[in-house]
Image (tube, rainbow, N blue to C red):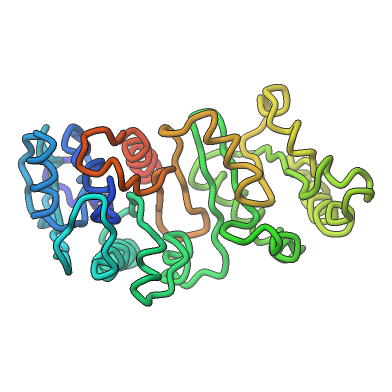
Length: 327
């Protein structure tokens, strides 16, 4: 790719008191044809590298077409607002975290990058700073101005998309409407075809209630809302199941013929996926006009600066983002 302008992939380093800076340092071990650029405070990253005994050359990214060298990390400096103590949250740095997200979204939307991979943030401390914040997914959705996005987590063998995301359990049933399901399924099918190059996706769908409602005895959402929507896709010849009991859907016999599973709520599908591949799973936001992948874990404050943080999920997230950008 020498001599050709190659758009970078940006990586946000996330909550500065957590393991985000630590795992971003692992990116220096990569040599990718497309530049991978970390958004974060360079002084913090240098201090964390010194503490962990890692020898890295930090290079300010200025639009170079070349890939970085081994043990070299491209950086775009985002200055901290306050001094960081490893493992101790400080609301004074909430604006610093949001500036990383703002830049990454702006670069992607303006065609200056192919997208973003994100290290974890701590939602609570951003809200403690008086800034209403519900998560990366919702932030990028609002920035991009799209009506609906879909959260999907994936391992090498399983993809699970969510009909609802960060809602209290008592609100889930009311949120599952025919309109929402149509929006979610349209996005899921579109991105499986366009981003993952699956020509004819096969999707299994979880029921909301135990035993998928058991013919109405355990709830009528499947009969009145979920299955009528699924029938409309099946009538078009699409490979979509009717609602299935979630306690048996995730068995190897069912999953061997599925390209993705659609779960009705966060803790219906994600515990299964994470039990299969925690640390190797990634989060993908479908429905955005750019690529966004993320780690499958939180800030792990107690591990910051200890050398015990595992960087595998971030590297898998970068791998997928680069793969999607190349396709």
